[in-house]
Amino acid sequence: MSILLALLLQVGPDPMAGAMQGDDLVRDRPPRPSAQTQTEQESLNPTSAWLVRCLDQLAEDAARAHAMAQIRRSEVTGPDRVLANHCLGMAATELGLWDDARTAFLAARDETPADEARIRARFASMAGNAALAGGDPADALGLLGQAQQDARAAASAPLQALAAIDVARVLVTLGRSEEALSALEEATALMPERSEGWLLKATLLRRLDRLGLAQEAIEQAARLAPTNPEIGLEAGVIAVLAGHDEAARQSWQSVIELQPESLAAATARDYLAQLDPAETVPAPTTTNEEEPSA
Image (cartoon, rainbow, N blue to C red; front, side, top):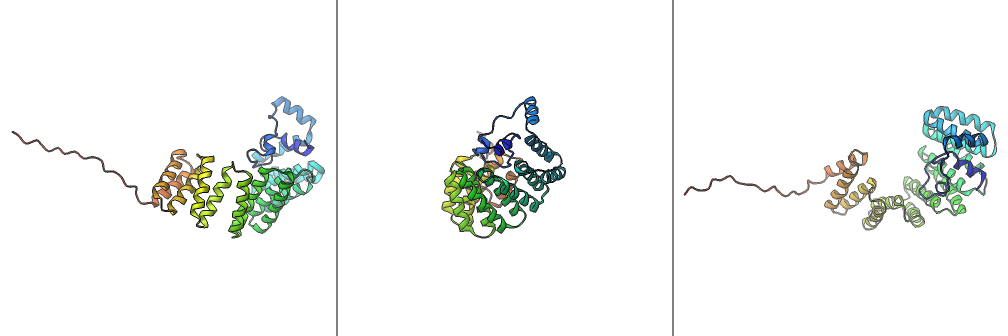
């Protein structure tokens, strides 16, 4: 394991932010040490100790973490500077400073050694997403292209799938739907067991009015994640567009039953209100007619 990866893995849960299930960065991480062991480890490893403090500060005061990372970045080099840029990008993201976030994540990627392709791919993806959030999809596409190249160099299917999904989102923003669909085909081929790619593919196919293929994709997503409310919502939309109102009603009702207080449930209620009322069987009526007297 490289020095940089080891440092990232020491800082606690999800130091790279947004790791996918099955990602090497998650799978290879050892159990979080106890408080005493953590203290001993920090005394031996000031670099990872600093990143722990910066990320902890991020949860309490993002502006302070941002300043802390800027100072650190100006004082160090090598892996220390990579980690300073990482925390700086995270703080800028929390503050909505998308240009700062993009610049910091890209610097972290560029200053990560070339043989650390997995980490370079992650930072490039984070830079691309920051660019997209900042309203620059063209720049985002270029950065995510770098992420794809790095992920391929790392031979990491999870990172390749993640980058392909991000690329698809950008291409949709740019109005390049067919290219976006190709990217989602790649993502679902790389990680067929993940529901996210199938859900996004179903949504895009529905927007392209390819309802048969959209139905196949949403069924696969539902098999993989049957309790995901977003899948239930999309399944209902596809069903109603195909003229299957009752199937749509059942999908949206299931969302409400699963998470009645969620935003998804509120959306499902709005959708249901737009359908014609479900046919109901009238309750049996009884008459109280008196029997004729003898």
